Image (cartoon, rainbow, N blue to C red; front, side, top):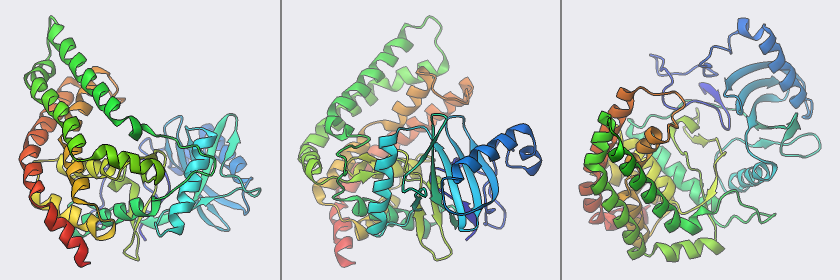
Length: 393
């Protein structure tokens, strides 16, 4: 395998590619802190001392420590030990969330999901707490990042997502605690998003000196608001409320970021998934909507690509005709435009994008959203084809 990855490893699709298609064993730290010279300074020694204290709670001896990513509240280290390579992650969520995540990882691994195991401490705990910070240790997996542009690798991603959903089915927390149950208030959440879009529209309209972003957003706001309202009605017509009730008693999980940056293809040709930080009880269409948007948002929507992706998914975790109609309804909500407007008006983009960058992204999202409607309508006529494909497997 080509690189070492672990649960929660930082970085997404912006990593530089090597020309030979392979990746280094550990991806580089953006700040350069993984360089040996940097680790020799005071900060590097402090990191090594901290990680050594964490690893003292685990069996085995530490041979080397490498910083992979540091984002303040979150950080990742690769640690070589006499018992194998480990990934140490500083997490930003609480004890109960960690315990549920560890239980979910075990549950899905036993049911066939390929994901790094949570390593328990010498006294059987799921994490180590030091100075009010929490650290989780995972086994390391070596592999390379899959590419959406390669048909077989995209197919592998979809089959792996289906396996994730299938493996999570029936999960029941032994403590009755779940990190997120927002599925049960799905309509309230969507109406809140519509209210935010409406508020941003009013904010932009009230400005004495409007930006180009404001003007572009205002030109398209009303059609997208109408689209958002229609999405709710379409979900109801597709019987989504009945599906939600079913998930109250027979729960399943969504990953929420089942994307290339959290996946690795091993030398065995199998795909491994990590980064379980955001597990939530939800219908599979949440993850399906996100991966479809991610794959399509670089250009216009492609019906044949959508059908191929969902055929691959159907081979492993078959959905019904009503459930695919619910997916179409979910996809019809203008999530991409909402997300870009949120970044702009709530100023939540940490990298402080320029006005031009925000405008460019909004243009791209509007173009993608506008190309989506015809594809979604055409897909409704292909649902039986997708379902029949699954039966043949």
